[in-house]
Length: 464
Ligand SMILES: *Cc1c(COP(=O)(O)O)cnc(C)c1O
Image (cartoon, rainbow, N blue to C red; front, side):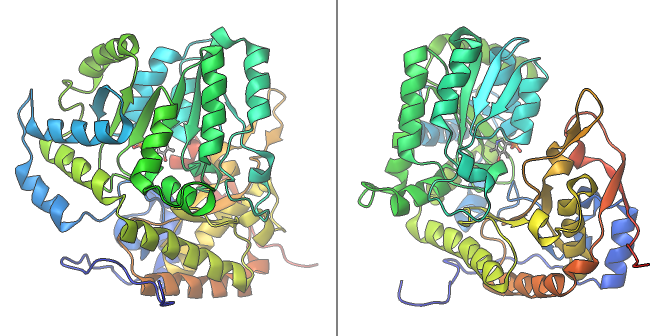
């Protein structure tokens, strides 16, 4: 590409208005939401970077597919299309539709998990961990050490620590390992990619020990982009072929189609092993729906089939990754501490560094997320001690390894001028960062507390 300006490789056919709000209005909205951004109404938000999950814009082809959706209870043509597109990508023979990723997780980890079982991942996504822990099993995150240093440059910061993987298997006994789960890209750890080499090593260790190896593959196309451009030997391999290679290394996969299938709802799981698939099929029918629709409408299955094809388009992937990198690079140049290198679907701001005067127990990430909303109407997501901090057996606060704020970018939704606006809001945040104050939690549930916790803003510290 010879030009500096990133252009969206699509034009706009339908628009969705954004309601412009004032700072005064947003202060009131946030207070009413108890400082939890999940509790805001969408029309109170200007730029919604809460998540890239299910928030993407479908193409004209996908919308056209809605009319083709075959809503037959059994044997839907749309299921055949979805199944074939997944089969072409993964090569796995046993494929099951679910209404979203976590439904697939509940079925699969419900079978593999139990008290005494251990799961190992580069980083378990929050619903993955929750679905494992409700079975009584334990979940260990072993990203490479570089993953925790937000300013260290590493081409594949999403990689799993191979030495730790071997020692965990030895320590707990291979018969007690529920599964090894490789999350690509590593969502909870900066959206960082995983190399093919790392996946190969994991595959080898799992095979040697007879341990199940599962790809949590929500962002497999974005991961393939990084492999092609950063890992030796893939220059002449297509993104699709790179993804195929990675699937061939694992025993099965779970995908939230709300990410790289560019749809608003859907998911699936797929496996090589017939016996395991047979066990899952039963639960699928009991809890999700018949095997040719899972929890999905025929029209949704049509759009997934098309989206899984569109996401590997080189122009789309180039725009997607460059536009995310553009935002991250600009923030970095301004002096906003961001996780480097910039990940695929999101820019992660290091709130521990930006709001260094706020201790982890007062949730600097949540404080920054609130300030971004008040200053610019931007909704982001804390990935820090609100999400994964907890109290130990003695009641002491254990903070998360990092205090990040994720700006997750919906696919094909915002334009470059929206991105420029976000950069401007950060100028304001930088100017006033010393005045920021922390929060305390006044109410929270036991699992996944970040979704529903209520907060109170701590008073401004005045100098005596
Ligand atoms: C989104 C996500 C899930 C869960 O999928 P849902 O469709 O939200 O239920 C699991 N793993 C990863 C890595 C994800 O990003």
